[in-house]
Image 1 (tube, helix red, strand yellow):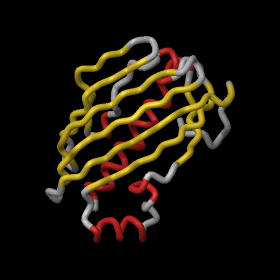
Image 2 (cartoon, rainbow, N blue to C red):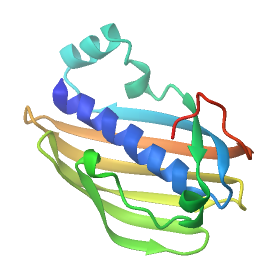
Image 3 (cartoon, rainbow, N blue to C red):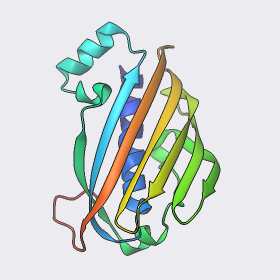
Image 4 (cartoon, rainbow, N blue to C red):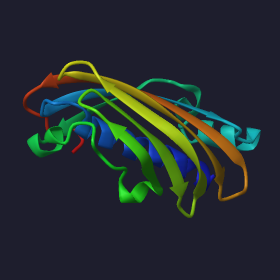
Length: 163
């Protein structure tokens, strides 16, 4: 179960990084994330359902507010994955409006690789996705697909927006 939770954490961390750095505007962004996981044993799926995490494996949309500082917005699409994710980006290609990279995960909870891509739509919206195939700490092959999008909301952040 810990390995599967690590995949969920990677999704949250990377999507937060993408949200914080994808757009050209600072302020509050509304981020929608959909995650699909394949290869989970039935008992693990049931445990995730009981823990209230079923939507994280079936593509149920999750919406959050993300606060983006001017410094983060200035980076555009040129960002790296957080150190806590256990994954890194390689072969990254970044333009003013698009980013693609290979994902390499070598953390203690999962090992594998995948691909990520993102595109800006002007300075107030973006979308992207990634797919990663990993072996979790229990030796199970798991495929995770994440689709995400962000829409700039306003110049100031509410107190509840993630930083």
